[in-house]
Image (tube, rainbow, N blue to C red; front, side, top):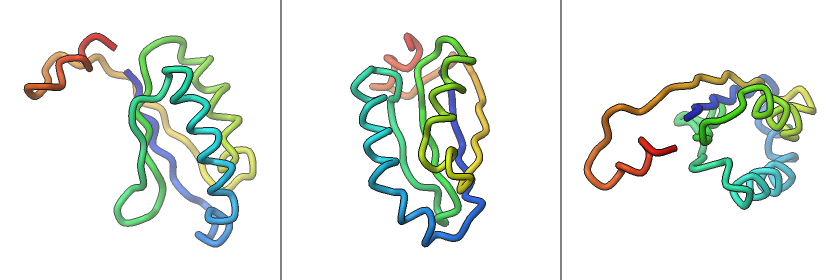
Length: 96
């Protein structure tokens, strides 16, 4: 499993101008099954995406196409981990 942490490096006005395109990009990768969950950081300094395990270089190529990244408005940090414990009801995460 991957945790992707997006950090905004441009003003929120620039982020908001790209939000519709970013959501289209997210939905494409939810549909493909790559993304599991996503949302804003609190406070709003970036976002977080949970993605399935797999080819890290392929994931990084996909992240490079995020409108936030492409425009230079955000940077991404990728952390890969293997869940070994989960709360009841979240056991499916160990299978990803």
